[in-house]
Amino acid sequence: VAMMVSDLKSGRWQVNGEAIKINCDGSLIDGQHRLTACVKSGVPLVSLVIRGLPNDVRDTIDNGAKRTHGDRLTMRGIKNGNAVSATLRNLHGLANGEGVKTRASSGDLFDVLEKHPGIETSVSAASKLFPGQGSKIAAFHYLGVFLGDDDAADRLCSVWRTGVPTYEGDPMHAVRERIVRAASSNSKLLSETVLRLMCRAWPAFRDYKPLKVVRPVEKVRIDGWDLRTATGRTND
Image 1: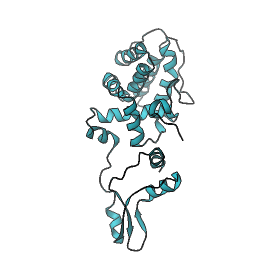
Image 2: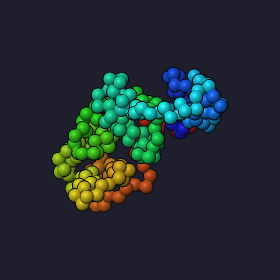
Image 3: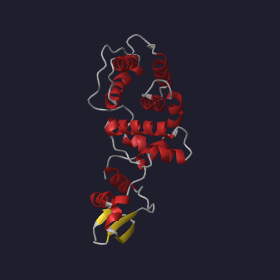
Image 4: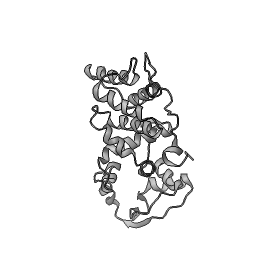
């Protein structure tokens, strides 16, 4: 519902042929989230409405596999659609301060990509550098490039690819080693934890400052990167 509210308020809502469905008793059987978003946003929407459906038709609704945002990117001709989508989610989460917990709509993510097409290049640069962390590495690589620090972006890829610190006290190397240690002990760091560790490491890494201990940040925030910068919009 929150994602639909965002799309309605930003004017991105589109009539796509999906109908609001009402059965022969007058009960709503499909469209609850869309209508709730309409009420919460205060923005009217246009939709097909089908009435008089049999009661048992509800069992056949939403049975197919849901199309992902990665699928939508691939349909638009974007290479590595799933990887680009995951990177966009990380960048959107860094912009709105919610990290990987963010519930970005496809419209939100398309806004980021439209404003920052160079993200595709960062995804290519970061792919296959380190198992399971490609979208986060790509996100910080793009932040380095976008914020004018190509050196930090290049060093980021180097340390994740080689496992060799780029200077004494390299905090990104410390994050990488922590992930390796967790995996070797048959445990795994949560995706949110890794993102917050990288947020802590990034400012020091960018400026060649050593960090003896890297702890997850409490508030996800990157100087120079907010929702307006990422999408051209605010949280309103």
